[in-house]
Structures are given as C-alpha cells and as structure tokens.
Image 1 (cartoon, rainbow, N blue to C red):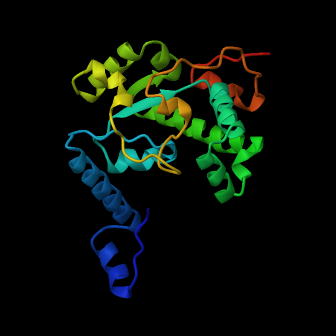
Image 2: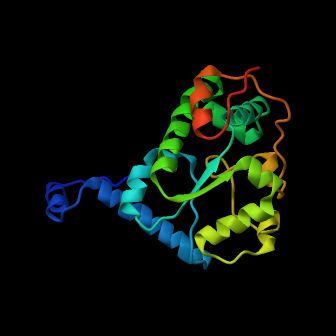
Length: 217
C-alpha cells in the first residue's frame, strides 16, 4: 500500500516538511497497524508477512523499537512444502493460480522467489538483534520454543497459546493468510519431511549460512 501525492502544492509541501513519499507510506502502514492493535484490545502486535524480510532495512530504520524473531526452516523442506501445496491445490489455490497466470506453479518460479528471500533473511539475521526460531524446533518442542518467544517479547507465557485452533482468527482467504489443511487443523503438526531431499546446488550456500548442512543425495 502506497501513498500517491497529487497536486503541485502537495508535491512542494512534503519535502518542505522534511519528508519524502516513503515517509508517508510508513505513516499509513503505522496507522493501519495501530488501528488493528487497538481493535484487538492487546498491547503488542506481531506481524509475520514473508516479504517483510525484503525490506528489513526500511523496517529497522523507521520502526527502531521493533523486536525481531527470525523463523528458519531447511530451504529444501520449504521447497518440498511449496511443491505439495502446488500439487494438491485447494479451490482457493486453483483460483489463485488462475489469477496469477499459473506462473507460480513452475519449479523455476519457486527457486526465483525463494532464494532471494532466504538471502535477505540471512542478511537481516546477521545485522539485527533478535531471537532465532527453527521450524524443526517449534514442531518438536512447541512449549519450550514459545516460552522463549514470550520472554523475548516480554509477555507472559500462557499454555493455551498452543491451542490456537480453539480461538477465532477472522476470515482467512485468498491472499489473507495460510488456508492449508495443516494450519486449519488447529494443532502444531510434526514436519512431514521424513526422507532426505535431493540437494539443489543453488541452495547449498544459503542452506549452510542458515545452519542446515549440505545433504548430498
């Protein structure tokens, strides 16, 4: 979501206030997030949109009090998960594919999308303070992992946090959150990847940086 400045006066006024258009974008985003937080009745907002990692420098500059949680998973297992979702699309998935022209279904698109994202994640993790949570750690020890997250965010730990399926979360749909059967189960499920996956050479270096050693199959 972006602000569009129209009119000569407005275009002159914004720099006169010592601002650029991106500053107005940031104010818009901040207002929307704050409105959501007030409506929730809570004090802390945790935002998890994958593409946020692409703009970590901007976020760290304009939201200097933000606290970071780095969510990691074996890159090859991420690809496997994406392939499984692609291979058994739900009705919403089929609609999304039509809207996207099916280009996202090609293997090369998965690589093109994921590799830069993981590279930005590694750079952000090396540059910003925060806590690292691994998918494998979360699914095998959700209790201990979420206790660490709560401590990092300075909020009290409540065991019922793990029973997220019992709480309404609003309307999830196309482009509005994960709609997979696994997330809708309401339970933290074990990683379904049981066998070593075939290594993809282009992911070897980034996998090692993120702490997942090379698997030569």
